[in-house]
Length: 347
Image (cartoon, rainbow, N blue to C red; front, side):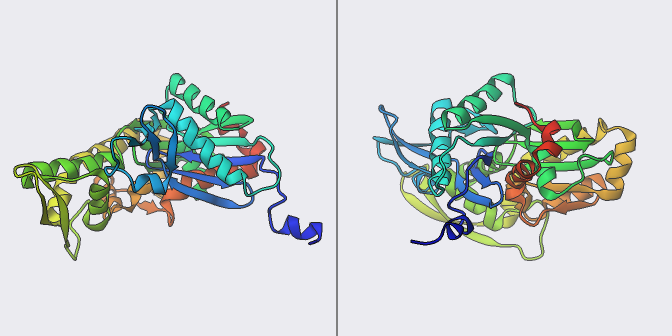
């Protein structure tokens, strides 16, 4: 029998008392205090129609999007950054927390910090709280996503210095100016990666009479999508269903076309950044000129988006090395120094 010390060193005999969650429209990430990010899965659930029995959750369920028979439905329970289906979200969150906790011996109810959009309503906040508690949380705290992203990046949010963060997620874009552990100016728009995908779906339907699903649109965005002209323009074969004949077909599309169809939602994001800057106090605005803006979230991975924002604002833009994990990393840092970051949390 191995000595007790080896159990502790293996991290199995550790109380799962502190868990951070980034409950995103596109992906859900979970971190455990002292261990970092331990789970990253798509926010998709496959359920049996009628009974609502869960068939699969996460990546396996995402592979079913647009491919399910009549008896199974693949759903995304979060829309525009907030909970659209409380029951399914609760089941999904419970599944992820159980997955994290099952690898540890102590099964105490965890303290959970959840990243939520800064523009969330009280009704939506109650839905998040009830879902986390039903999933097994003891205490539930919420932190605004741009605040969590700023902490995850390592910005000095507790100082008087102005820090500006743009967090582009799947359902929302959150822009916030932070100082003294509070959000001084913020703008939240319900435009993110999903809106970009929908623009690609609409473009192909109008211009090529080709019907594609969301996963294909996302693949196009990631492979040849860009915000500004790039040196090596690309092209891509896209397969879908012909709307006129009803039979499958393949077309070749170019990166210039995709860039053009993404301009409207990207313009909305740039306008939201300008709106946040317009309501920023002048002293904090001078700090932003000196230190620039930090861009986080999956949308920050779109080629040239940082250069587009820099061009429109004349401010330096810094993209985090791992933009998709900034919010959950911030939740983890809050848990590691709970007393320091207590002012940024809502119960």
